[in-house]
Image (cartoon, rainbow, N blue to C red):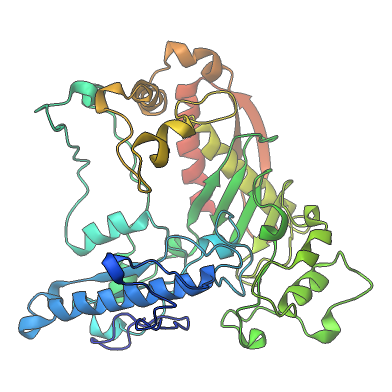
Length: 447
C-alpha cells in the first residue's frame, strides 16, 4: 500500500539488488543480460523484482512531470498473477504454491495507487473480502465511468467484417461478464455485505474426476476443494524457510513451537509444519520423500475456514457437513454450466506439440501457431456458446445434455446451525440453466 502520493512501488518482501558491475553475476557484452553466475531461482526472482521496481520508478517519474498533469488522472494497479513456485519463491506462511489452489498459490499481494486514488484511502489495507483478477475489468471501467456494453471486434487483419461471430448477434446471446465491480470499496471504503460473502470459483478440473465436479470454491470465509490434481507430494505442504521470524507472521498463523510437534505422531500436521519450519533449508528437503502426502492431498475433499485458519492447517470437513453439502452443490452447478475443455482425457483439439514455440516457430517465446482461418476448434466453441446461452440444445450434444443430472439445492442454508436439503432431478439443458440461475439467487439471498 502506498502511504503517500509519491511512494508507489513499496514491496512487502526484501529485494536484493544485483551487483551490476560484477562480471561473475552479469555479462553485459553484446547485449547479453542473462544471469551467468551461480544463481538460485530465488536469486533470479529477486533480481527480476529489482528490475521491475526500477522500471516502475521511470514510469511514475514520467507520469508526474508537469505538476502531475497526467498523474492526477492515473491509477496504478499492481498485482501478482499467482503464488511462487515452491522453494523458488516465498509464500510463507501460506500453504502450497504455484500450480495449487491452496492459498500459497492463489492469494497474492496487490496495491492500488496513483493521483486518482482518494487521499484518505492511501495507506489503507482492504482485506474484508476476496478480489479476483477478473474483477479488474469491471472495476477499472467503473473508475473511468464507462459501462460494459459487450462490444466485440468483428475485424481481422485482411477482412473488414468477420462473419464467424455473427451467430452471437443473430441469437441475441449475452454472455455474462466474470468479475464484480469493487471500485466503491477501493475509492470510498464502502464494503457491501455481498462482497464480504461473495462466491469465487477458483478452479474446475473434470479430467480424471471421480465426482460430479472437482475443483475449488470460495464462499465468504469458507474454502472447499477436491479432486485428484489438487496437489502432489511436497506441494501439498508448507515452506517456511524464507521466513526470518515465523512466530510473528502477519496472518497470525500458529506455526508451532518446540512443544507443539509431537515426535510420536509423525503423520500429524503439527509435526509436518514444525519440521518444515525448522528444516533450515530453502531447497526441497530430501527427507520429505518419506512423508505420506496422501494424508494432505485433498483428493476426497478439504474444507477450510480462512478467517480462523488462513494457512489451511485444519481440514474441518467432518465438523461442518452442511457447509460441505452446500459447497458441493455450488461446485456441481458450476461444472454443469461450464464449457467442455478443448484438451481432456479423450479429446484433444489442441495438441501440445502443435503450440510449442520451439517446434512451431523456432523460438523461446510464444508466437502465432495457427492461421486464423485454420482454427478448427472455433466451431466447438460456437456449439458450446449455443448450448449454454443460445436457449436450445445442439444435436451433437443432445445425448450429453438431455441426460444431465443436475443437483439443485433448495431450502435454507445458514452458516450457523441449519442443515441443507438437497434433491436430484433430471432436466433438459434449457431447464437446467434456468434452475441454476434461480438456485444461485435463492441461496445467495438466504445466506
